[in-house]
Image (cartoon, rainbow, N blue to C red; front, side, top):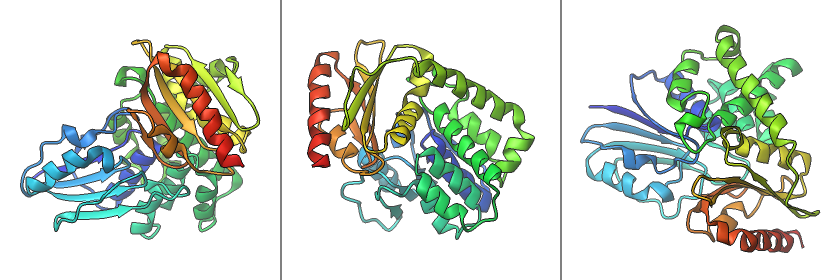
Length: 323
């Protein structure tokens, strides 16, 4: 029998798994990747009796892999907040899926564990740019403003580390980063006792964000804005957290951050307006490689020939939602 943990390589996936394994330690096989590597169950060859936990990746995108694991006789626990489509019914499948725009996987796990490791849930929520949800959980704890700011920063940095076209773009492979944070039941303890890791994430984030801030918008009005980042490692790393920063700075505006790929196409990160967190997943599913959730979604490979059409559709879509 094998214990297999399948998780998104961003802050939410990491923090969800840290909570679960802090509550129930296991020597597990880790299956993860860059944030956009979401077809993770395709990497799993499960056998009868295996225990598989899946965190923060869409069931709809992993349907074939899930069915294969269940048919092989594995027991699967699936916790997620993305669009799921039809959820199969199976005696070996336990599901906790909630696609609400103010929920993330770390918060779902926090509920399952009755707040046992709530600080990690707060970090995961901050990383997913769910600041109000993170603050709501933080109210149940005695945290100073400085401590809360530290948790927010850590969430942002962990999320930042997950973005890239490949593992080579990242400061830390997500599996390695998980192993570095997993020993710590408290994120504050991690930041204190693994200061070198934290500092590397912080320095990388600050340098990349300074570079992104120099780039002008290719389109911007009161309803939507589009930015294009170059085909460089720093740009691939910063694409998601830069989208979050834009959303926070302009909460009534939708944002699209496109990063040039080496095939000439674009990797797209979409954020719905913070004050109207709707439609990002619906918009992205219009494109063959698109998906996500209502507040934040993406397109893995937008053809360069579709750029003008994309910008027009993006404007029209969010203008219609603002009326």
